Length: 188
Image (cartoon, rainbow, N blue to C red; front, top):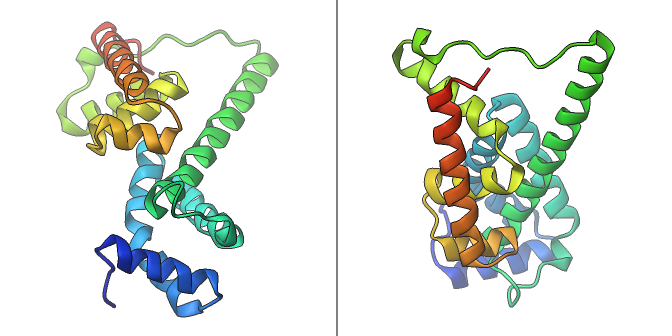
């Protein structure tokens, strides 16, 4: 299957999908599945949840395809908006579940294991993932988009619905917090 690389070809594909052409919708799925999954995974750090978010993002996009307006945002930006919103929903639900479990157990926040005890690359990646998960949502999104997905602040701002300056500030604060979490061993 030929993947659409240029903007006009993508706009044509989206237009055909909006008119109900199933092949065009399938082509959009084929082209965007991998990048959407990667973004979801970067945001939630769980392959199963990222898969669910990817599927739900496409389901929502197909239902709302007639609302897509190329003049307002690129299709890529529009699709990533679904992913970001679904990841936010995931984190809100997860935080509620954690608070409920902690209340039921009467538990206090557990001490984090000593990062010096962790050896090897996988452990370092696990620590980074855990630290990333502890960042405030706005900082996590900025760090994922700018540092991990290597988008420009302008591109990240378009996806997040904010300014490039705000994205730079969020990413800077997120990096600073990540360093503190990793240096202090404050990651479970």
